[in-house]
Each structure stands twice: as structure tokens, then as C-alpha cells.
Image (cartoon, rainbow, N blue to C red; front, side, top):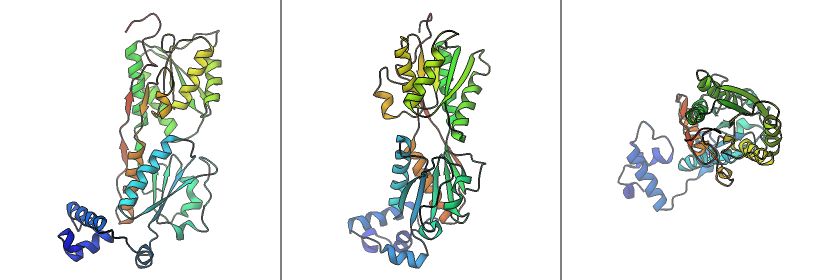
Length: 327
């Protein structure tokens, strides 16, 4: 293999042993990996585990499997892990965002590290035992003992939504918040309030569980007369936004003619509904990939800095100027 890659045997050993960082150039490592693929090389993982004292397995903990976002996070983490002969076990916590029980007899003997998405560090004590490297995704960067965090700029995402709606002329806002006590949703509320703070806009907040039917019921109560009806509804998630669309239709309100609606996530359903949703696109696969790279760095003895990834507003047909204003 060294001859095929045009490198030394020592370089091959470093790359295949995943010890090349800082000792072998990235271009050299890629040549070795390419040669290994071309030659059909398969490492003896059992022998490597005994030699290095590692299982080459990471656990990705998520609150649920019902979100398209977490599927993207897993895809990104698994892609990077495969490049380094690591496996990723996806573990949806049976208690959601509550304390996650250890899925193994002892996670410390079955895993090299843990990546947790949209959880709090305190909920992972049973899994980590405070002895496994931990990388937190979409979580409070100052909230726990994790080695590092990889976050999305959720506050900026809601600021982008607010600026878009303000530019259209909206001044009466309803925030349909997810009824979940977690850092990521607090960030969304803070970003929206911050963007509206100097605009003389009115903002009312209601909460609903992260389900279409719950969002529909909450929005119906908030939009039904009497009282001043908002002209724009900003939702913490596309699922909630779809519930608002259903409520608006039942009340005879036109979207966006009478009511503008915006979400967060850019899920598949954002373009499956009519009108298509204005929403904030979250790069879920990038989150998973960055999280896996961070864990690998920790396992190599480094302490990577916390990372915040940008998000992007995607404007579609569910937002327009409020009634009485033209574009």
C-alpha cells in the first residue's frame, strides 16, 4: 500500500491508525486513504481495539427520532465517522429531553465518546459517568462539562425573520413558541425579542407542544376574535407553522394576504404545504459533521473551541406585506 500511495510505510501506519494529524500532511493522508480504498483494505478493528484500548464507537444521543433535523445530524456525524473507521450508534432517549438512561451495561466500556444533540449535559450523567468525552450540539455553551459545543446561530435566525417581516411593514407579531424548556428555544425567543425591541412593534407569545394539532389549537385561540389580531406569526419550528396555516384556513384567513407565517428548520414539509413556508434553513448535516470532528479531536488529546454555524432565511410565499400595505 505504501508503494501504491507513494509514501513511507510509517506514513501508512499513522494514517490507518488514525494518528496522522500534526504528523502527516492532509494530502498525504488522503493519498493513503485512496490507496486503501482502491486495494480493498479493511482494518482489523478487533485487533486495533485491543491495541489502542478503544472501541472506535461514538454514541449520538437525541431527544427523539420524529424530527428530520436529527436525521440530518446523524447523517453528517456518520459520514465523518466512516472516514475515520468509527461507528456511530444513534440513541433516541426514551425520556426525550429528560435524564437519559444508559443503553448499555456500561457505556464507559462500550464507547469512546458521546455526542448529544439538543440535550442538557445534566441529562447525560448515566451515560457518561463523567468519564467519557462529551460534545454537545445545539446546547448551552456554558451549561455543562462537555469538552466543547457545536451550535447553530438560532438567535440570528429569528433576527433574520423579524427583520424580513419588519421590512414588509408588519408591526403586530405573535410568537408561537415550542413548549420545551431548552437552550435552543430560549435562543429563538431572545433573538426575536431583540430584533423587535427598537421597532415599536407589538409582540405577544404563546406556547404549544411541538405537534401540528397542538399548534393549530393554540393559534386558533390566539387568532379568533375578539381582540387585535396579529399580522405576522413567527413559529419556533416548521411543524408549529403548519399548525398555524391550518388554523388560519379554518378561520377564513388568507395566508399571506391577511396573515404572514414563518417557521424554523426548512423541513421537507415547508415546501409540501400551500403556501410554501418562509423559514430558517438549519444545516443539520454540518452540525453532525462538526460534532464528530470535534469528538475525534478530543480523543486525540485536543480541546477544540466551541463553534457556531450560520443559518439562512429562506423567503417563500407565506410572508407578504400586511393588509392595507403593498409591497
